[in-house]
Image (cartoon, rainbow, N blue to C red; front, side):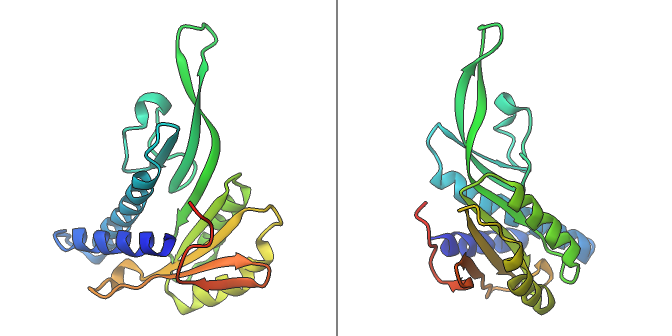
Amino acid sequence: MLLEKLEKSLEDAFNESLGTECLDSKSLHSARSKAWVKYLANSFRSEYQDPEYRVFSSDYAENRTEFKLNEFLFDISVVSIGSFSSASNKKKLKCVTGMEWAIESEFQRSDSRASIIDFSKLVMARSKNKLLILPQSKTIKDWALSVLTEAIPNDGDNYFLAFVPHPEHWTSKLNVELYAHGKDGWVSRREQTPAI
């Protein structure tokens, strides 16, 4: 299910980018990256529709009324919320009570520092599921699959790595590689392990 969500979001982002007219490749890559996060966040919104959930991402302003922000700590945050009385007892305030997904997407093809910073954010999160999305760069992929295993704490959370084409290499045939971390390290997944 997670793999399907990633593949469909990537396809939708690619299709949107076909109509994007940019002056240079950097602008096109940026537009594609933003579309990717937008569609992935929307796919989680479709799944977590109940009022006790919110999905935060930079493109989505509907959480601003209650939380005064779009993005909440991560590129995409899927959280459960509760309602609590204000100090004056005149208002009900929404508060995050738990986290289902913490998601970071990083398209640096050779800079492992940017990847490890995003991974560190995920390690710090108290979330049931943590997903780091990296580009399909041999250097980054080999590094992530070997080194990041050592960085995963024994916290009981589910860790996932997804590798997607860098926005420069988007074509009509996009593929996503998904790995879940288990007792024996990273295992390639064609389906998502935890039920969400």
